[in-house]
Amino acid sequence: MKKNRKDPVFDLERAYADCHQITLRLAAAEAPGRALDLGAGQGALSEALKLRGFEVTAADINTAQFRASGVTCAKLDLNRPLPFPDEGFDLVLAVEILEHLESPRAFLREIFRVLRPGGLAVVSTPNITSLPSRVLFLATGCFDLFVPTKRRLEDPLDAEADGHISPLPGWLLRYHLREGGFEIEKTRYTMAYVPLVPRAALRFLRGRLSGRVGLYAARRPRPS
Image (cartoon, rainbow, N blue to C red; front, side, top):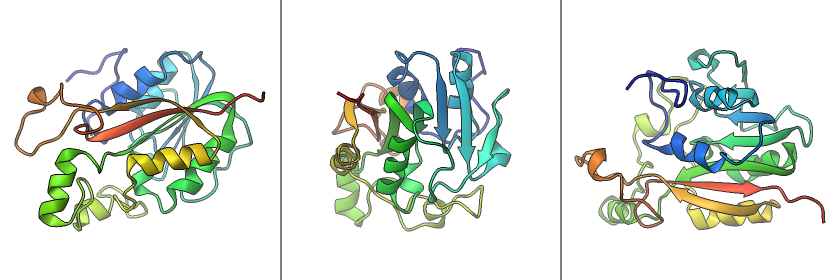
C-alpha cells in the first residue's frame, strides 16, 4: 500500500484494519482547531489531522517510532495525569490505547478535562462481546485480543509500555463516558476478524456482533 496525502500509511501497522479510516470519518465534521493525538504510535492520525488543517499535539510513550512530518510527539506515560491545561483542545483522539492502560476510567476523565466545551473525543476499545470473541471465550476462556501470551501482554516495541491488559466491554466504556460527563454521539465498528479468513471477505461484516474494534465519538457538552 502506498503512502498518499489523503490517507497516510506507515510501514508498521499498529492499528487494526480500517480503524484509522473510521476514526477520521467520525471526526470529519469537526472544524480545524487544536487536536491531541494520544497513543499516537507512528503518527498516521496526527499527519492526517495536520493535512486537514489542525494544529496537532501528539503523545506516546515510545516517541522513537513517531514518523509524522511537521508534528512533535511528546513522551508521555498515559497512566499519569495529562500535562495539559483544562479545555485546551477541540479534538482528542485515543485510538487503540485504552486496552493498554491501568485505569481507562481515569484516563477518560482526563480527556474530558482537556477538551473544551463542545469538543469531540474519539476513543476505541476491542469489541470483546462480539460473536467471534464469545466463541473464543467459550473455547479458551480468553477474549479476542486478550490472551496470556507475551506478545499480547507486553508491547513488542517498548519495554515501558504494556500490551493488552484492560479488557473493556462496550457497555462499560459507554457507562464510563457518560459518567465522566460525555454525550455519546456515534458508535462505529471495524470489520470483523476470523482466523485464516482474508480481510477482503470480512470487510462487510461489522457492527456490534461482528466488528473487532468499537469506536466511540463522544462530545463534551457546552454549558446550558
